[in-house]
Length: 349
Ligand code: TXA
Ligand code: MG
Image (cartoon, rainbow, N blue to C red; front, side):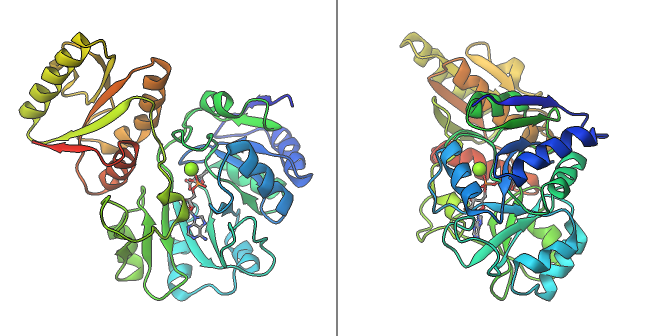
């Protein structure tokens, strides 16, 4: 299959191009498209053949359910059994935006889309091209992140092409995404909301609207026991080819430790990558050093993290050290993804 790459203005997308993409999805084909979080790999959420194609293109286990993307709040009613009061409030507060809600699914949603579950994850992305595409495709797009299973989610169209060229009909290239980490997932299918995956919308932001919110305890700790409630969180995701270790502690000690290790490992023939920040990169004389952004603006780190992990793969780095980030606000999502990428390997100084 030849994958067509279509450039789009992310703010004023050309409707004709999007309509053509919508036709592909309606006919059961696959189109990758930008959202405000990461690029998604879209197919018709109500067509079981489309979800089968998505799993095949990604090389993803078919028990790992897909998120259904909608373009307006009214469309929610058709795919869920009921909209609990808290879900309604959260949708009004955060949609369109980086929040995914898990609700009881209605019969119209094929079991293949939900990986065999009786619940469905739904979100309304905050991106003009994505919203237009959803409308042009019939209203319901199933879309996981547009990466091959086990790679970081794509934050640029070129990473989608690297992973999926020849496997899907079209890539809509809307330039770099805004946030860079996947949406917050909240389960509202039982009583109190439970965060299954941290993201840009934090626990505090949710609690302001919906009262007490719990966090699935498997999210931040490797040894919490139990099976994560978002099936996807049980797989080792976002894994770079290099052996990644997070180093946490006072700034000076962290740089000293990483420098010492880098010197030793380079002597032994390893290629070392270092993830620092704008304020620290000049303190690393050796290794391939990349800044994830500024500690004062952790959003910038969220945006660059996956690009850096992919670049280290391209550069065939064999060992990676990353500084740790503050575990609050968007920092919680950053640390959650980093810990998963590191297989929970963290050194506390
Ligand atoms: O920001 C995002 O959410 C991006 C963009 C493209 O919208 N999508 C995304 O999809 O990250 P994906 O498939 O890479 O991650 C979806 C996660 C998986 O961990 C999956 O297990 C979980 O959502 N999930 C989906 N349906 C679920 C359900 N019914 N119950 C619990 N977890 C669910
Ligand atoms: Mg994903």
